[in-house]
Amino acid sequence: MFLNIAMQLRNMFYKLVALGLGTCYIFQVFLNIGGVTKFIPSTGVTLPLVSYGGSSILSTLIMFAIIQGLYILREDEDEEFEKRRQEAIQRIREREEIGRTRQI
Figure 1 (cartoon, rainbow, N blue to C red):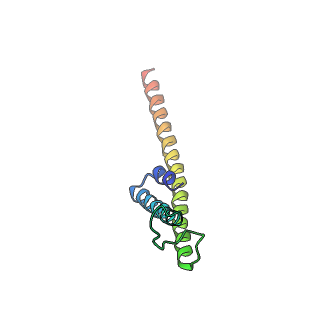
Figure 2 (cartoon, rainbow, N blue to C red):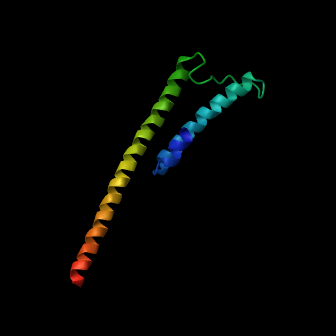
Figure 3 (cartoon, rainbow, N blue to C red):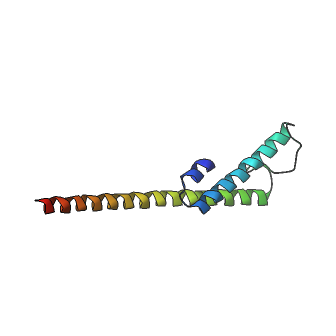
């Protein structure tokens, strides 16, 4: 989910923010689950939205809010891109019409 949103953003700063927050979240989950299954030594990192702790839940929700904001921004970028594309197509058609009328 995070990587999908990050790859669809056009602005490099927003892309890096989404990628960094997604990596943080995935790393937290990997550390916790790896510690529970004795795959890696337990580090005391809380499992997001499951483990007890107000600051952990708050920071995870803020992380999700930022990602959601970037998702909404991506949709706005897509609409603006489509609008510019339609305007460019319209200008090309107008130039072609002008060229045809001058040839006649």
